Every structure is written in C-alpha cells, then in structure tokens.
Image (cartoon, rainbow, N blue to C red; front, side, top):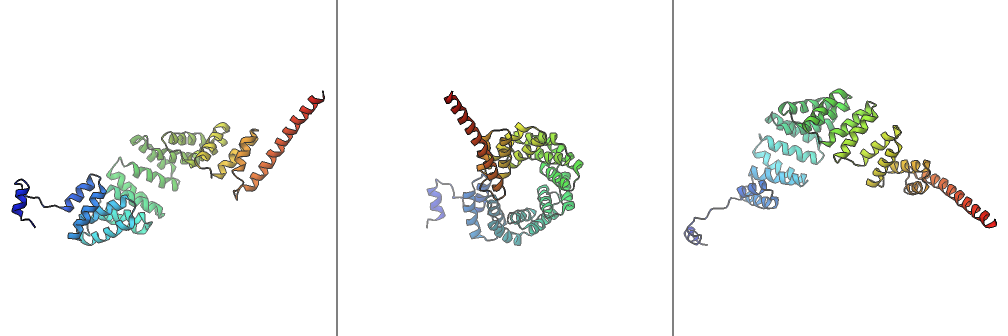
Length: 320
C-alpha cells in the first residue's frame, strides 16, 4: 500500500481526506439520494454497528418505502443505545402503525410525546391511533394538544372534526372544519367531511354543494359520485343523478348499485338500449342478477312489441 506521504504527492500535495461513510450517508439522505445513502450508512454500520444516526436514517428510508418490518428492526437496535430519543420512538410508532400493530404504535407515540411535550406530529399520530382504537376522548386530548402547539395544524383540526362527527358533536366538528378552510381552502377532505355532516343534519342541498366542491378540488372518487347521485335523486334532480351514477360506473364498472340505478332510470325514461346495456352488466351479480334478468325480459318484450307494430304497419302499407 502507498504511504500517506506518497498519496499526498500523487494528490498534488493535498493530504488525502479520510472518507466518512456516516456523514456521506446522512448527506445523501438529505439530498434525496436514498440508494447512495443506504450504501454509505451500511458501510458505517459495518465499522460501528451501534451508530444510532445510521440506524435511524436507514429506518426512515425503509419507512418511506413502506418496508415497515425492516425499519422496525433498525429502530429496535437503535433504541437500545439511545433510549431517550423522541424521534426514534416516533419512528417506532410509524413502523408499528404500518404493520397494523395499533397498540404498540400508540405506546411508542405516547413515549415520544412524553420525552418531547412539544412534538406536534407525534400528538397528531397518537390521536389518529387512539381514534382507531375507539378511545375518542383520549384522541380529542391528543389533537387539542397538537392544536395548542400549532394553531395552524390543519391535520389535527381535520381529525378532531372526524372524532367530533363520530360523537355527533356536529357544531364542534363544523367549527374545526371552518378553521381548516380558512387555513387551507383547497384541502379537499374538509369538504367531504362537511358533506357527510350536512347529510346527517338533513340538509341535502348543502351536502351537494360540499361534495361538488370536493370534486372540483380533485377528490371525485366512486363513493363521492355515489353520494351525489343519491342526493340528487332525493332532490328530484334526475338528470344530475343520472350523470353522477354514470361517473360512478365509469370509475368502477363493478359498482353494481350504481349500475342498477342507471338501468332503472334509463328504463323509466324509455331509453331501452341504455337500460339493456346496464342490466346486462348486472346479470352476473349475485345480488342484482335476478332483477337484471327481469329487466332484460321486460325490455325484450317492449322491443318485440315495437318490432311487431312496425312490421304490421309495413304489411298494411304493402296491402294498400
């Protein structure tokens, strides 16, 4: 091997800087080059298997890739050497949540907030898990703490509104959603949730306004259009209802309730070919198959009558 003196000579008189895989890996991660980051961080761990920064960063990379089990393994090693690191516990919560271990996730988020009482994101995530576990009052406390720490915590306010909806505290839910709209007027989920609340309050017209705003903001999935179709149907806006149900089927051809609505509405409006097409899409459905076959039989009978009347008219004309 070359001596340090010879290496310096060959390097133009500049002493060779020793490589630092840990620093290089962390820099690569910050730059968004995760492949390079993983390569360098793994090299750093070969030299020192207890590098907490390397383990934690590798875990974050795995979390971003959805590789929760791999992230958990790195974090369980890291926590042995840095047992008072709130970020590590937060990441443990994320990995556990990704593995659907809600009890472990809540425990880790709670430890994270215990170590850092100002950790807004950890309070939000803890609240979300508590809500899923059915501990709604505890979830409210977590979201309230997050909002106390950050008045502009849109996600905390939104999820607080969700819990209030579950508790049928509609006034508080709407108050939180109003705040979200002021802070982030293009946040589509808030309009969906407001639509749900207005439906529960029996205000179908306002529910339509909210859902249509959500669609305008890009949140128009099959469920939203189904809700719109049902609402328009109840409001006797049949053309709008038909359009909404058609959008449901365009997004999800297997949405049989929407197909049935289309079939019935087309049949009622004497649009027989469109009705026939919709019924045919339902024949294989266990729930709607029999109704579809009955609908097809009715349409076939009507079409046969039309054909017969046209044939009779042609015969009369020929006889004359």
